[in-house]
Length: 340
Length: 132
Length: 151
Image 1 (tube, chains in turn red, brown, purple):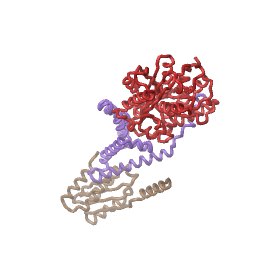
Image 2: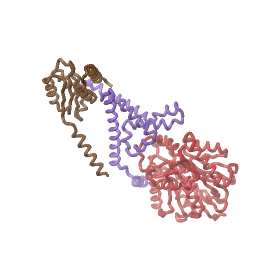
Image 3: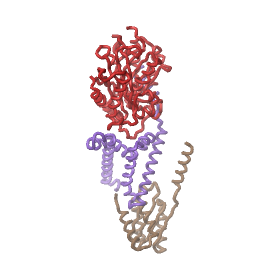
Image 4: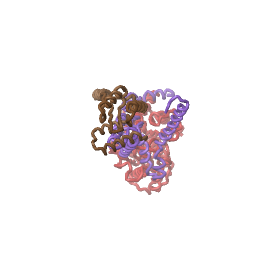
């Protein structure tokens, strides 16, 4: 054990391939859309309901990632994924149609990295040769779950965030050269700073992100400068600002290009999407497209992925509870690793 | 752009508040009666304009109440009806501050045919009694 | 950074609501909606036998119908994002709350989905509308009984 909640992977499992399927708003507005593997022109993705569309996105991402990895469904051993709908039914249905042994995960919007951590553990333990890990969200299905009906008119403040319609799945396999290896994972603690505004989740999640960030760096004995990119999941413009301020007050050099946030960048800073993107699919889509591609191309050799999640339910905030948040970190490294 | 919107808004406000001079039109009765109606209605300050028409035993009056007195429309109607009935004990007075009645009474002046006139009067009377 | 310091920082960072601007926008939006309503009311009065007193009902129905169309075509939420309370307080906001819930839940069937959820948001308007009407009527009745005011 390195430190509490920190796992170092000596075998360094790799992400062999990654794929993203996304919806129409992402196709139109996201600067990352050329890197997504499948884009739909309708939120319904050819299905009858939003929830079926949600499931379709997950299935698509699974198919695409297997194709890219040059594998078939029979090569895969596990499916580890989750979403935000009640009891994660889209993931459950997608798991049913793939027929894979399935672990459903709920870490709200931090599911992409918690799935990677679990997949790496399964691989490290020798229990799997190929694990599909990822997360998904669907704007219409999630907004109705957590907020109001889609067509209901109410004024969203500038600190609100927009749930993305996207699914990102990564294929995790035992170590091979030339792919980003999972070097270390830090399992997040649940941090609650008592914020209660469900339309300002970035601010609620920033302390959790900072907590995990600090623990990860302390355990790894690294500084921010050691990473080519430190990318948070969906803090949005406001949450990112708060997170960076916390980091710089704690003595880290929190300036420069290496600090990114998937939510803030997802729609290219378009103010029509307020503070930025959110949702389990937000971090998954960016981590498994832009960040992954840049690692393969050699632009990044060491990356810290920190997906953040607000663990609230509509019931809990209506009862006046604060918003507990978490953040799981994954360190990706193109190198061989010292332990090998 | 903002200045334009502001000035446009101001113009609308001024135009809206200043519109409509006092105007009282009476028709259909003896010249003396007409003058009497003019006098009674002219004294009322809450009224911005009015139309009155005598049709046989009926006196139909549509009045327009000034904006802030609209909250007391029912009271004003009651008062005026009282005054009218006192002044014209032989006529059946139908008085209303409702815009619809005002419009319809206005139209009465142009109607010539006996049948239609009668019908119209009955309609106006029944409209003025409608509750909801 | 402890909780308190963070809360302070959060309040500084989160953009303030531009209250004056929002009020103005709400005023203009609400005003336009009401002006349209007035126009429809005059339409009913002019072309049909409705008086000022009776034209209210068809006008409200028409306004709700228009709000429903706008909701269905996805325009109402844009108006609301601009106008805020200006679009929520008039009766069109009620129509929007009702139809948006109905659209949202039509995948769960007509009885449990549309029927059961249609008033999910608008229901509280009805509940508190009826309740406050009751309270006002009660107060007025008492005042009339004691001869303070007349009907």
